[in-house]
Image 1 (tube, rainbow, N blue to C red):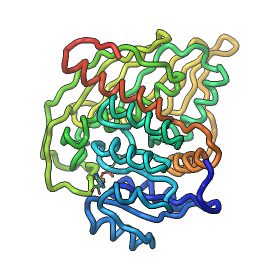
Image 2: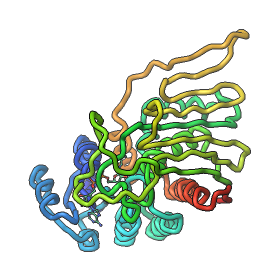
Image 3: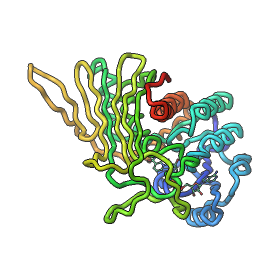
Image 4: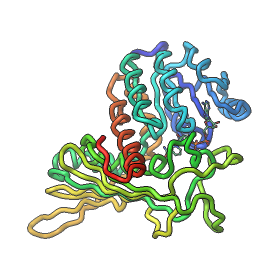
Length: 351
Ligand SMILES: NC(=O)c1ccc[n+]([C@@H]2O[C@H](COP(=O)([O-])OP(=O)(O)OC[C@H]3O[C@@H](n4cnc5c(N)ncnc54)[C@H](O)[C@@H]3O)[C@@H](O)[C@H]2O)c1
């Protein structure tokens, strides 16, 4: 997987809105072996402004044109969810490595096509499931892999916002593919499954509700996409359910953008035969000398976006399989779409 020239990895961005400007591009700019050579956005003025700010020489509004450049090694896809698959596949087919934002795609078929395109191209396809790079998660994963938790049979995860629906394309199903399940639930469900040892999902039973939609609640702050002029509210506000895995384990989840609940910013807990663990609070629950003990690892926390981007670059350089890889993208997409399918049919679905 050698690079075209020198040690620098030359990056192109597709989509330069909020997450690109505030998290992913700054993370790249901190790496010594990166050069950002081109940006693409449907909004030309936005792409030009970002390019000028960072001295990036090339600007595009059509990603099919940008991926033809032979001075780009890798692409970061930071668009709305509906173009994750087309942009990623175009980049892979043009011989570029890809770091694609979460969720992987809108459908399982798209995630499978992305995986196949990566295999055919022999390039790295990694998904930006950034919570896997939280320090707490990387430490707990080490404990889990060392067998400290025994057999993990249960996981429980929540992210509950009371009035935190993002503004912009997120609520338009044609652009997002769904609401809090696909937007924030994806992080929590993914990380909890990861800490459970990444078992394969087999069945899902879930329900979704949309009691709030648009609202005028005062005194709350909401995530804003760059464009908030065309608001469509066609997705769920809250969802809950259970996911079953091939090793007999199960995970319960609930997730909301808007609901009359006590807020839970991030809860992910796994339960094993020897010990259990929680990400936030960062604790391990076990027993020693016939006493219950809580262990709190003491470790300096790192910036998860920088760790994610560094991992992507290292995979390009070494040929290592990324975390999470293209097959993991298919597994997580099966869960997300399974949740919506189960809610639509009003029954458990096989995945
Ligand atoms: N990892 C995280 O924690 C995290 C947080 C927020 C958003 N995200 C993800 O990042 C992505 C973008 O979210 P955002 O908040 O930055 O949205 P945004 O609307 O602020 O930015 C998206 C940008 O993509 C551009 N775009 C859309 N389709 C395009 C296409 N086909 N070609 C070129 N440009 C295109 C838009 O014009 C916009 O500038 C989403 O997939 C979202 O799920 C991830």
